[in-house]
Amino acid sequence: AEVRHREVLELSKKVKGPEHPDTLIRMNNLASTLDSQGKWGEAEVRHREVLELSKKVKGPEHPDTLIRMNNLASTLDSQGKWGEAEVRHRE
Image 1: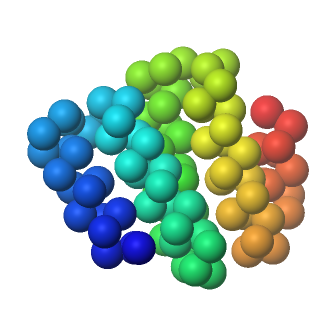
Image 2 (image 1 turned 90 degrees about the vertical axis):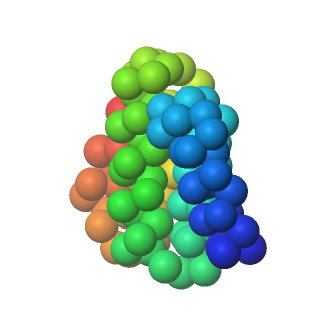
Image 3 (image 1 turned 120 degrees about the vertical axis):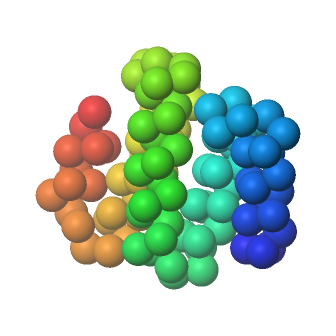
């Protein structure tokens, strides 16, 4: 699944652009797949990237942005980064 998510993400970036909402969905899907595989370091990087883009494109209070903030917090929690995870959960 990871390989396919990477392929689809790259195609979406090329065809629709890196900030298109569909590309953000693909980016989030890859980050979630990495997280479920226990690849938390890379998942964290991807979650941070998609969160920042989502804030820029959709705004900080959009439901998609809030879901992505929660996804990052969960990944941080999985790594034992509880202080930052708590801050993200409270945002």
